[in-house]
Amino acid sequence: LTHGIVEKLSPTSIVISELPVGAWTNSYKLHLIKMREEGAIQSFSENHTTTSVSFTISVTDLQLEQIMKKGMLKTFHLQTSLLITNMNLFDEKWRVQKFNSFEEIADVVEVDLEYITKLSKTL
Image 1: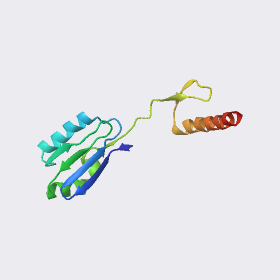
Image 2: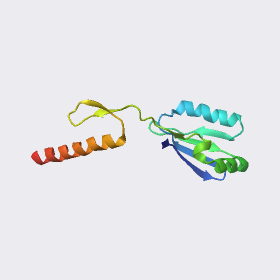
Image 3: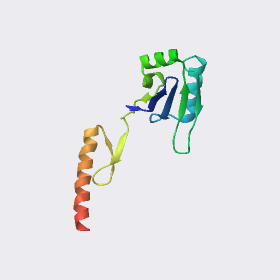
Image 4: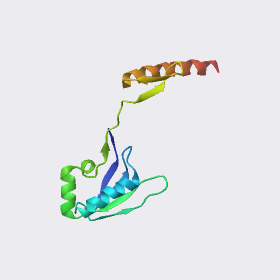
């Protein structure tokens, strides 16, 4: 489960400073436009840089009350699930291998750490 970062700045403003994995700024802007048209938020402005996302959202007291009641992550659709059906990594012999669980990956990582530790002692 991944989520963005959202926080209340004041009784009438909310800032979204990070989107969840897989969410794109332009698509998210369309979501905020829809929320504005539906009356869920008053307005929003964009304050992005080349390396960060930043939406400042203006709300009324009633809108803020409804947002807080539902939860900010849920209201603003800032939570996504990552699929774990395609976990392909290099195994300990540097071959691409499909893994079925995080536990299997952890086993390989332990082997890699042991290998790296041995290798670093020989240098």
